[in-house]
Amino acid sequence: LLNMKRAAKLFPIIEPILAEEGVPNDLKYLAVAESDLLNARSPAGAKGIWQFMKGTAQDYGMEVNKDIDERYHLEKATRAAAKYLKSKKEKLGTWAFAMAAYNAGTTGVANAVAQQKAKSYFDLNMSEETTRYYFRIAAFKELMEHPQKYGFYLEDEDLYPPMTDFTNVEVTSTVENLGDFANEHGISYRQLKVYNPWLRTHRLPNASKRTYQVKI
Image (cartoon, rainbow, N blue to C red; front, side):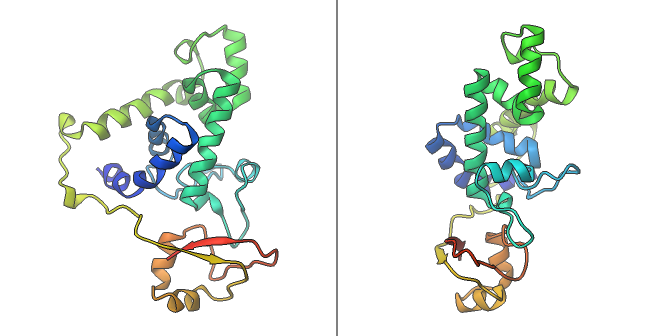
């Protein structure tokens, strides 16, 4: 039920990015399997809705430090996940193999395919988690697209509203106090953090004069 409520909030942002990147829309359910659509942190240190490790996030252009962690930036992390999945599909041949690689790593899947002479994901014998990963995602899709078939009933008013009601403010210099910044733009500090969870502390340092888009 909570995943369905959260999907109403986040899928309107995720879906257009997957479409722009040429990734099947169904792969949005991979984020459900990874994090329950929460900005979660795994015991291994993966973070965000798409559960990126620090090194992989940086490889895909996300900034990660004590003040800024773009693994929590929904648009940037979604685009990075799409690019990651496309690269794995190009290397391994199918979206199902790409999904397995998202869970187990490209090398592990490629080695298993070579050793087992597997022609599809469904021929692979891997860890229990990876073997059932595709089926978990398929199950989320089935449940969330046909909830009443399985006894889940939600009215439209039960769903969380889409997080699309914002404008972007361009920031090119250091913001010493995000509370002051929020007040200057007519919102609360809490609202600023809810819409910009990638801002991890009370300030936005910008010695390198990068351009950030902050949601208001």
